[in-house]
Image (spheres, rainbow, N blue to C red):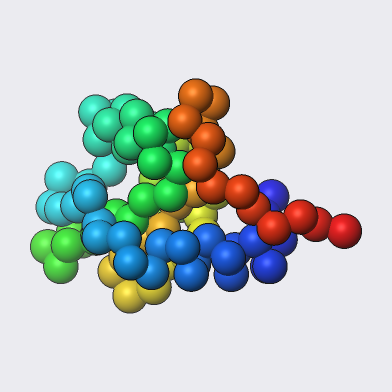
Length: 99
C-alpha cells in the first residue's frame, strides 16, 4: 500500500506522462492486462485513458486495471487512470520513505 505522501509524489511524476493505453467499448481484456503489465515492468508508472464509448463505471474499470495487473491505483482523475508497479528489472522511481 502506498502512503498519501507517496501517491502525491507519483501523481506529480505522472503529470507529464501521456496515456499509452485506452479502454474502449470492449472493456478490460486479458490481452490488454498483459500488455499493461509489460509496460509497467518497463516504465513503473503509466496513464490509461477510459474512452467515452466505454459503458462501464470508470471506478470499476480503474479497479479492474489495478487488480488485473497487481499494480497500485495512484489516481483516477476524470477518465484517466494512473497505475504504479515497482519494476523488477528496470527500477527507476525512488519513492519517498515512510516513517
